[in-house]
Length: 425
Image 1 (cartoon, rainbow, N blue to C red):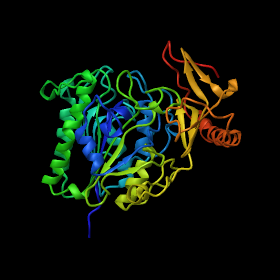
Image 2 (cartoon, rainbow, N blue to C red):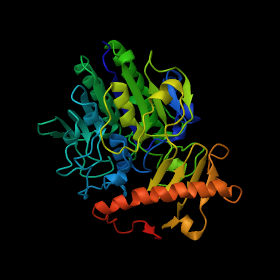
Image 3 (cartoon, helix red, strand yellow):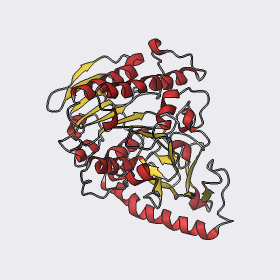
Image 4 (cartoon, rainbow, N blue to C red):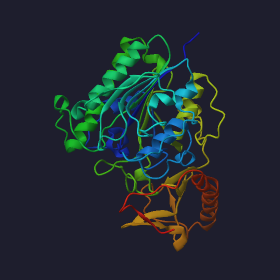
């Protein structure tokens, strides 16, 4: 009987869609990730479930929008007491005890009890940081479920190398059983501190250096799996938690991390590779989301998805056989507000920013309808040309508002820090 597949999910931090050569990037050199795409499956219309870190990671781990968790607003700060509810079923919990599991890298879903440590959520091991590496106090944590974590100083230039080392070590130590590893990198989130041992002379500067270091480490994963005889038994996934921030490329898409409703903040790389199981060089153009990872990995592992209301959908048939997207539409949030709805062809946008204002465009009588196949950069609104489609998309968006926005009332109201974004609501 064939063993269930192993899963290694590599999650970059603030990596742009256009930073990869296979997605059209030119300045940052990513030959190994490009090779991964050539040897596996690449999605063109894959969305993070939020345009900033904490809510996107909450969605990825649970298959449920962060508004269901009370984590839709902004990101968790060092002074925060919020966290992912302990009742949520994460990917390692859903895969069950047959899988060894580890979180290696950044957590950022709660750093005070009871939301801490990550081993409270089904991970057997944790090696990493409580939150982003531009936050203080910052220490490296290491430990296993049921035991106190140890602490050590953070060596910034060595973070990426260390996280890959720990990934390979975990795979080797658990090569006799199925495993799930979430390798949640801190790169290329600022501060940019390239490893002096892996300098590439990137024409994209320090940002390019840290992305190219990720690329240099990816073959170590594949070579390690080959050495262990696990390459054909392991699905490796590569994606990002949201679009690029101060540097990086969102490719042809408008805006970037935190940018309200536009694709530059949401659309991210998504690559999958498993020789002998996945087709090579396949491109999938259907809409998909990081919410889909939990139900997809459950299907591939042969386990039933959790009996909760999931927002994600199983992508197995899309990945293996280019079936149509299982989504009629994907909802894009800006904090706890529905900002846009995307279908296969159309996108309806009702929120944007201007200076310090969060503008509800629909309340100003100026919703934007974009044809995402003809105009993926979202430059020209077509509501006047297609009033019937605009009305249909408006109905979808209003239904999403009615379904999701009241869920925020079940949690304490988030208080932004002084000087935060002002809302025109």
